Figure 1 (cartoon, rainbow, N blue to C red):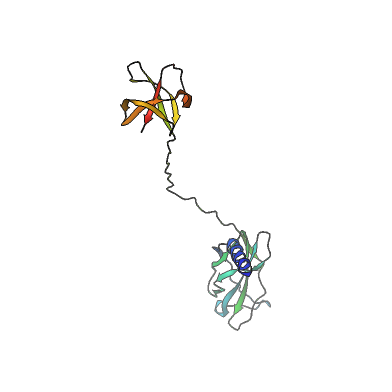
Figure 2: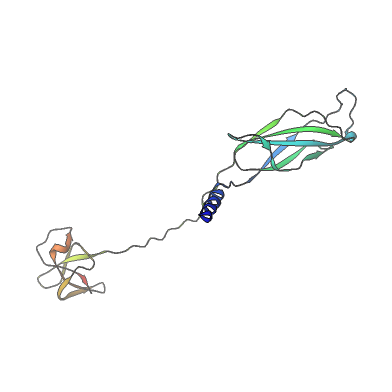
Length: 198
């Protein structure tokens, strides 16, 4: 019983596994030129910009972005691209902090957010189909007075009994008389009828 429970748990876990998709956020910003006390902040004193990425899946709770890269932008940069992975539609929000060469950090910026929608997969291509037909009935023809093939009058299930000698050969099959009661008639005839028989 324990083995069965473990198996069912493994199946449930497999079926619930979400596919991780790569996402990106392209950020731009204006370099600060002063400190909080309005004293000058030369570009040479900016070490980097710290990036905090938070992802909120639709209907879920916010959490740090999975697989975020990079975690900082260089101090001389004015933007860059952050990559991360998502498993559901939602919203990614980015907050930056300026870090100076002494390790001092600014207060965080307001969040800059981007909606993430995972595109559905494309359909398969080059679809082909092979149709195998099983023939379950044979054609029935009327028998003329000269025991030759007449008109086409219906169908008969394969395996129904035939009687008498071979009346004619048509399309590599021998035709012999069959019982009228076994025939699905498409037309009206009082003549005898025949079908291909072994």
